[in-house]
Amino acid sequence: MKKITLILMMISTLISYAQKKANGTIYSEHPAITAVESMEQAFVKGDADKVASFLADDFRQIYASNTNKDAKGADKQSFLEDVKFWKDNFDYLSITRFPGAYPDALEYKDGANDDVVWVQTWEQVKGVHKKTGVKLDMPFHRLFIVDKNNKIKTMMNYYDSRIYQEIGNSFADRKNGTIYNNHEYINNVRRMIYAFENKDYSTGYSFYDEKAQFTYGNIPDNDQKPLTLAQMKESDKKFFDKFEINSIDVSGYPDYLHYELGNTKVVQSWWNFRLTRKSDKKKIILPMFYIHNFNDEGKISNESAYFDESLLEK
Image (cartoon, rainbow, N blue to C red; front, top):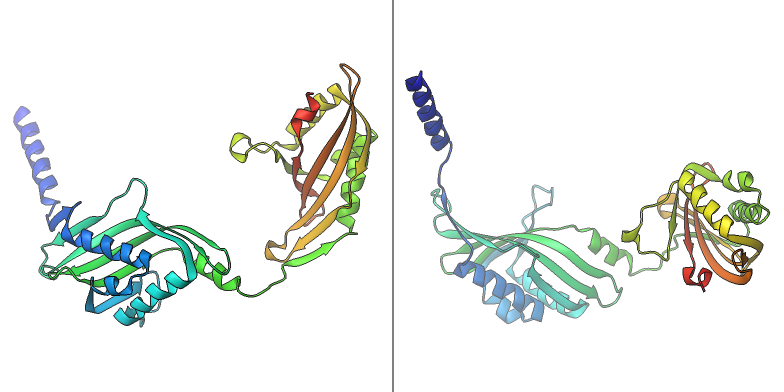
């Protein structure tokens, strides 16, 4: 039995070795990495001549996520024009290693790549577009092919292109919906607020969707999870136990914003809550700003409340 077990272990070891095949060497430090990162820093500085010194004559830049099978990429001259474009159009440009990552240089031994080195990088690109103010703060993954003369032959880019669409869209004015100062949803918010003022809680809560979520905007988002309707009722009860509502008065006038993007329906409203603290009969005026999102059924799906909580404690 021991012999059989030993034989099986030997076979398993041989199979494990048979499944592995070395195809070159990976380096964390390499002249090709130095060339790539030096070229990128020259790009950041807008030094086209310096960038050109790192590129092979047949250099190609490729957007590797492109599904066009006939795309040939951009040549060396086009890439050097990019250097000027970025210098002229972006402030605070930087290219740094992505936190926790570092580049690799791969020397393959497969017969097809013996004369070149592949460099792969994970980077963070930051900048602000000068005209539109759109901020870049995005990860980039790049693959470079570097020849035996330490010249970059190919650069393949992987990134989220939507930020560039945002820059393009920002050059022209575009309406994104309509603002109303009179609307059914404004009426609903007023009816809801005044129901609570008159202690008609069942009517007040009837304006909310059963799955509505509630947040206090004066608390950092990371410090709270949205409350459910049931949890909000409990929170309201604690508030009503401590404070008497004398009056709730609108400040200015509410706005209903119907956004085209996402068909989002929002009412913004400003109020002064006139309260009496039951413990010491202190009169308090609490300014309140509400944002109410409505769903397609006309119910409030989200409520965000902004106020100075310290006013309740003084």
